[in-house]
Structure formats: C-alpha cells, structure tokens
Length: 200
Image (tube, rainbow, N blue to C red; front, side, top):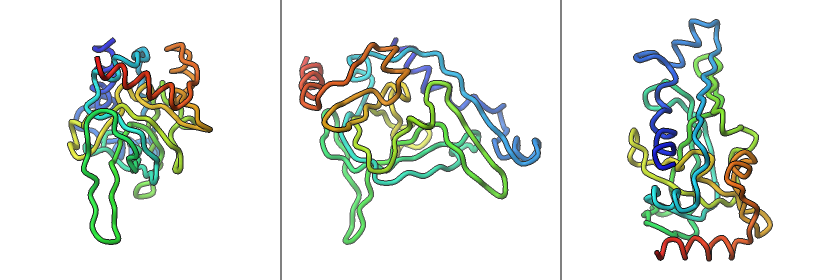
C-alpha cells in the first residue's frame, strides 16, 4: 500500500503531455480543457498514512482558492489551514502584526477561469462535492510538496483527510470510507487511536 499511496502523489504531474500546459490545451480546444486524473490506489490504513506523513494536524479551513500548478499542467486547489493541534511534526505559522498566514495544503483538482479560458482538473477518487470547504474542521495527514516545498499535500489525496462534524470524525469521501471500511468515531476516540499509533 505504501507504494500505491506514493504513486498516487507522484503521478499527478503526468496528466498533460510533456511541455504542454492545460492553458495550451484549452486554446486548442476552443476555450475549455478538462484533465481527468485516474488514480487506482486503495485507501491506506491509518497506520500507513501516519508512517508516510511528516505532519499530522487538526485544523480549520479558513480560505481556499484554485490556481494553475507551478508547471501549469493542471488546476490545483489550495487550502489555508489554521492549525489547532499537531499530532506529528510541527509548523511555524507565519505572522506579523495584523496578518497571520496559516499552513497551505494543495491538492490536484478544481475549476477556474484564466484569460477567458475554462480550465478543470478532476481526480477520479476525489469528487469536488466532497472536497473540504471553508469553515470545516479537518484532521490532515500531510507531506511537503516536492514542487513547492513551502506547501503541503495530503497523503493519498482524499484518504489522507478526515472531516470533523458534530464531534465525529469521518473519512473525507464516501469512497474512502467504503474502501477502508471506516465508520465515524468520536473525536476523542480518533485522537486516542492516533496517539496510540504514533507512540509505537
């Protein structure tokens, strides 16, 4: 599973032919381009996610935006996370008087307009309607982005994120819940299990 989760992260940049951008593709196709990234990795276990993560945290989504990836081959969504609890690793939140910058988590996928073009990137295992939203509280299993070291990526995309709602922790997507066989836990139960796992 470790190889499958890593392949999930490493295959993202191969959606557009080498040297081409999603913008070029949209111009050739009359003003719109959709890139679909098919990922067939299973959902990693909590232990696998924890072992692959350099940072595990609980936090709140305070802002999100879509933009082009650094190589302009796909659309990415960036989330600004206000960390509340660190379970593994640490991160120094950047701040100055009157201005605080949270941690930035980036994932492939999203829709945007650019220069009159409609650009879309879709992940087969990460439906947009189940993506994190501003105001939601999450538990995230993260690693630094290889392309943008100041930012982070979720381990295994959707499998590396859990949504907290009404005191319960559940996998981010229904597909991950089915694949892993997860059922919602109380926040206290989830944190207890995670801390035991990390203490091994």
